[in-house]
Length: 400
Image 1 (cartoon, rainbow, N blue to C red):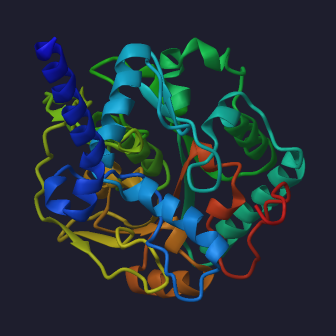
Image 2 (cartoon, rainbow, N blue to C red):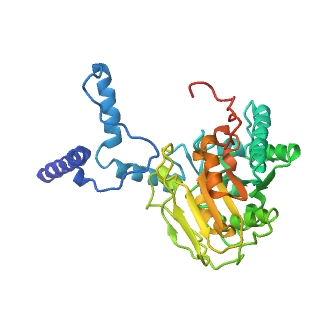
Image 3 (cartoon, rainbow, N blue to C red):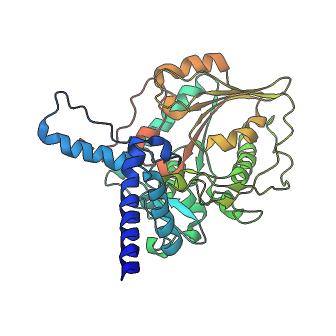
């Protein structure tokens, strides 16, 4: 009996100690040495009592405590890992676990597009009006650059949903025969003379030849995918400027390092806990290629979205301005070899009033607008040349 009482007391003390650890780590942060979660959101701030209505204080403190209690990161990671490993389930509504360890971005909105609606060809009610207005915007860009003697090319990067649709879970249902992006691109080809490269069929045809072309735990293409895409883009650009030759060599030996970071596992809080072996292409002989990060525009709120300039001294190649998104990160080391100089500018930073000074400085022969498939139904993600107002998303309700 005495031994039972001692055991019960021991368990009670341990229980109270475990329950008090989050509070102890809150007042003594040194106890909690786990890395912060990359949650892609702003955590609740400590509420200020001065001037705050008394009725709002408890809820504000509860929100702050829920985001900052001790060992929160560790507990969130353990919870997420348990559900992912045991049930192939996601703790984030933005991450869709697929087959064989593949993950897919499943968010909605301007920042991340809407890959599920695109995959299922769920067009907005205003799609025909949007198609027409976006066509006119592309044509305006084409005229604007043509008047300055520049060749304007549009390159569409397929979404991971489109290239590796067989890795999606059965819960998604059968894909549409054509995605929303496919329907829009078919409309552009029928109604315009725009120079458009859709990389989807090329990447799908090679998606398993040497290794996967997209990350399993990230929404973007990997090093091999960017290399394959750069080769096809160089071929496409070469149709309009014969100085641009295919990338060599076409096939290279791969390395397979371990990757334990990425935007999707970050949303799950599992960076460093879950990963993949990713194919990496050995670096091409750089020759005289130099890469320079330029100052970030003052109107850009993202510290990582700075322009990049590349230069190959003595190369008899065209100059290019590339309007890019996040796929350009892996693309640049390969595609930059196709130009004597190239300026890589985030489309979100390419404003009408700022593009002409860049053209005057770089003096490109070619302008390339690279766009991700999942953003084609989001007009706000488009570049608009001077002389025209940007297309408005007519399907967006006020206040949202």
